[in-house]
Image (tube, rainbow, N blue to C red):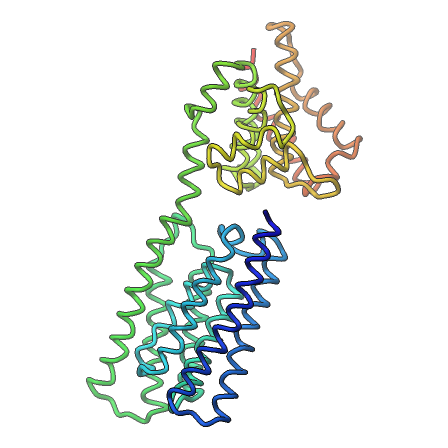
Amino acid sequence: MDEKRDFKVKLVYLGLLVLTGGLVFAFSYLTGKSYEAILRNTIVSIIITGTTVFAHADALGKGKEGLTYDNFDHRLRFLCIYAGMIVLACAFSLVPNLFWPYMALFVILSLFSNTEIGIVSGIGLVAIAVLLEESGGYQEFLMYAIAGVVAVVLFKDLKEDTNIRIPTAISLMIQAVLLTAFNILFQNRTLSFELFVLPAINIMINLIILLIFLNMFGIYVIRKTNDRYMSINDTEYPLLVRLKEEKKEEYYRAIHTAYLAERIAIGLGLNLRAVKNCSYYHRIGTLEDKTAWEDVKHFYEDEHFPLEAIEYLHEYIEPQKGAVRSTESLAVNVSETFISALMDIFREDKTAKVNYDQLIDSLLDKKISGNEILNYDISYIQYDQIRKILKKEKLYYDFLR
């Protein structure tokens, strides 16, 4: 599956290079450019798209960390958007440059890839439009490049609760200042009403595009995964209800593991929703008396779990040999180990007196002496924090009796 997807990406890369060269050649020819200009524009545009392709391929090679949000799982999305913007860049050369909405386009490109790719591709598209202009110059290139870079930085790392009013206001203000300065410094215009009208129109165009895009991005990218996590991490979710009805002990083991793992995730600043999800569902295969990943992954795929959740579950159920496991996985592992030990003790004697501190130290020290924690991305300081967090929850452990 991954090989087929990678092959499609490579085909799209090639298609982008052909599309860019072909469009720029056609626009240059149809607008009456000299043969030297046609050749220059075509070669430069292919280099620009080639740079963007290289940056995108490099980011993909780094895995999920190379691209923001869910862009690694939807890698063709950026490439399709970039293809559309190549067409727009060519069309913008026929429109007065004061109307170009590049500030908003920079933001769109960056949010569908990452900050670096957004800047590289945005600057490249501005360069294409300037090259194709009848009298394009470095002035408008610098103006839109600076405004775009500022906007990309301001809209980096958007979250569901991010207040977009401040970055939007600052971005538009910078764009307005640059547009006005462009008119005064480079076109030698005197102060007049008209001097402020065109920048105002440009600001309105950028604002409309930004508001529409950010709203859709929030609904279909940022909130989509969050909403799905909220649904499947509910103890009343049908799959967990089924586990409770058919395998009650496994259900309560999962619930108690999730509670402790959640405390650890909060204390260490880990991916809370993924930790909770992994705690609930890593033994869901017991419903069919199966534990191997290939035998249980259908539960997660059939229920449309977020790809992030499936990856954490895969890592926990069947870790890749030699690969460093996440701290989130260790949080679940430690919690499950301790909960299982307590449940075994209380199953034999519900009134048993347990020295919780001693049991916690014993279990955690065993993982150190057996070099088990070397498999995880965690420091000894963080591991000691886990020890302290577990010892703070002594009142909770009596619920396991």
